[in-house]
Amino acid sequence: MNATSQDNLTTVTNPSAFADELIAPTYLAAAIRGRLAASASELSGFWFQVRGDRNNYARELQQQLAGDPVVVLVVRRAPFDNVNAVLDDFVVLLDENQEACEKHLTSDLATDRHAVVLLARNTLQIPQISSPVILPAWFPRLGGRTTSVIIEDLTWRAESPLNTTEAAIGELCQLLFDLEGALLERLHTVCTQTRAATDSFWDQTRRDGDGAFADFLEGVRHTRRDVRNPSSYRPSVREGRSLIARIWGKTQATPPDSLGKPGKALAQALALPEAVDASWYRSIVAVLSRPAGPMPAERAFATNIMVTITAACQMITAAAHADAYPSYPVPLIRSMSFDLRQGLAGARRTLIALDHYTG
Image 1 (cartoon, helix red, strand yellow):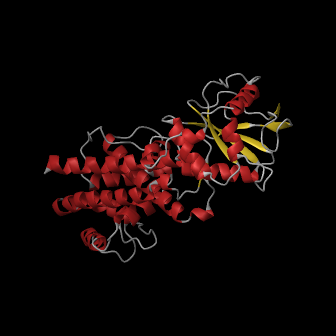
Image 2 (tube, rainbow, N blue to C red):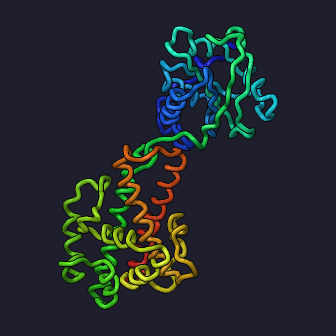
Image 3 (tube, rainbow, N blue to C red):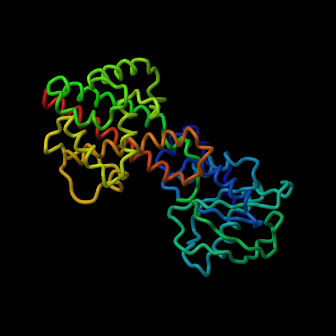
């Protein structure tokens, strides 16, 4: 029996201690419960890469899984790098942590499904196949029996609904609100000085019943004064009362190969110079949606704004209706949100710098 069980791990009191991990313990615990409930195996193995302190992560994850037939173990000596010996390494790990296994996989749990979580420094580098293994005689319920086990790497596969905290929806809303403010200031300045420069963009986004572009901008400004919580800002395409909504609606209705025209109109309306500051961030959705062929820097920047705004609005809306959509890997949601936030923040910084430069 290994005396260095999970009980000796330090207690985690600061949730931000796991900010650098791909998935926080609370989300990994939820993914494990879901997979365990759907499993047809008596014993499941779940692998997860932890880049920081594995002891702290193991303690927090075990607490999140309190009451579930799951034990969380830290991989230390067993290599798990040979497909023919992976389950031998698995049994060695169980023997090294007999005390923890007996504590958390007690025989009085009303279930025939159990799981072992393996926290490692790396992702699992071998094929994940189901193989038979003879478990140690002391192992709860299954001791001495031959059972099939598959070790599934959850590092990039643990899923969550789109409204997970990792999506940072409040930050996306705030950044949309802030970017709209920067766009309004720039468009108002250009419209006041050279109204003709904004005519094409207004033709692209105006609706029946709209008056002059300057009046629309003033109406948006008035509407924004009523927004008390920008972290909950959700423009409506149907109502079209915000500048973000008009850009979102136009981009949605335009095929990617035709975005050049509204992008050019927005670039003109913003009076962008031919050499836009190259430090702005091009979001991945803008790269994937870019029209065929090269485009001038100012048009690329304007198109990036349109596509990134649209993707951010879509993500916010999808999160608000998360029950209607599948769950997705948490690292994907987190990375997508981060990319969009980078794109929105970068566009705003560039516009503000442009105002300062031309002012």
